[in-house]
Image (tube, rainbow, N blue to C red; front, side, top):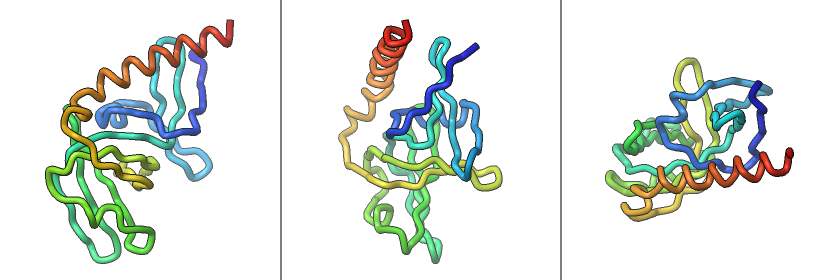
Length: 145
């Protein structure tokens, strides 16, 4: 049986992992379960890196689509909550700290912090994620005997 560990921090994921993971709603929050060996990380806050494909203003909110080598995802920001997406341009490379949301069948991210990064950092992200998760799994297994 897999051990489920709630992660209450922004957890680095690839965009494709969001869509290939088990998704659950609990207490008005959306979570994904990322499996690593016999562990499952329960995550509602994600950190994704991607390149901006498009940015649109839709009256009361901004929509932005970003992509990496594994897929693309919608970022959504309501006009009254901030001005992060309005500053983005097509082809910007960004690191997004966001809350995971699902409305009907649409999975999207609500950004809290957006940082400009370079293309090299975007390309290195999959290896970085792998290294961090391997270390995290070792620490958790060591702590649990």
